[in-house]
Amino acid sequence: MLKLNLKSEPEWIDLPRGVRLKVLPYSTMVALAARDDVRMRQAAKSGVSHVELSFVSGVAVARAAIIAWEGVGDANGDPVDANPDTIAQLMNAPDMYDAFFLTYLVPALVLDDEKNGSAPSQNGTTAAARTTAYRAPRSAKAAKKLPTRR
Image 1 (cartoon, one colour):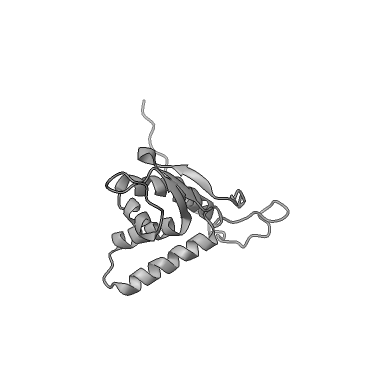
Image 2 (image 1 turned 90 degrees about the vertical axis):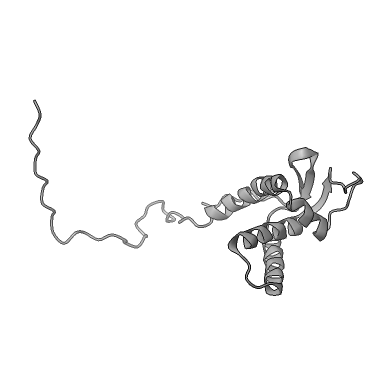
């Protein structure tokens, strides 16, 4: 069963080192914006590795989802605005990327995983389900009894 516990308003999530991100709820729009970002960057480069593509995908989701932040500054400690370039710089810090992934993406992926299950029949039985295993053509031979130890 798909549990619709989707948020409709942006929310704040906490990351390490006092960073807080205001993010849009993970939705089809965020996913599509991230895919489009990845496709554009992939088209600009050839020979992208699997690891690089995973990272680029995560940064693309961050760019699509993060609308504001607190606790992020430049080299002098002056606050900087969240924009595509600064978001990419933030995601370059391994602890920030990992925390964003675990806090924002994993819950969305768990929800996405729930969609892939099979729903029960309307009457609650599996009677409507298609048979996937048929009876064996003949009975199997019984296993030989082993001598018992005394």
